[in-house]
Image: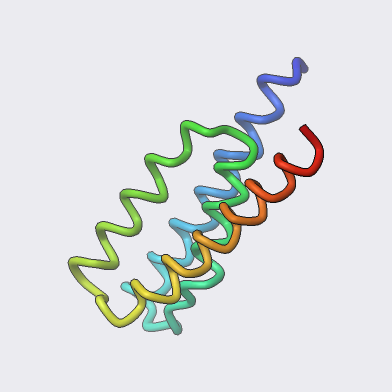
Length: 92
């Protein structure tokens, strides 16, 4: 398996886990965990930058349906992005 295929596989797995968390919340009444959602999607973004689409989609969903969860979601995504910027700045 090539490196590209592995990174796509990880990204899809992480996005699917995030979607599973949203479905569990909506259908089964489990607790919504925006920090976990943001972390999963941020890790997917770290493997494949095109996964930013999933971050925007889930952010839009939270803004539309669960406004209270949007702030922790955005703060967590911002934290992961800040960590990536600092890492890149120090190493490259």
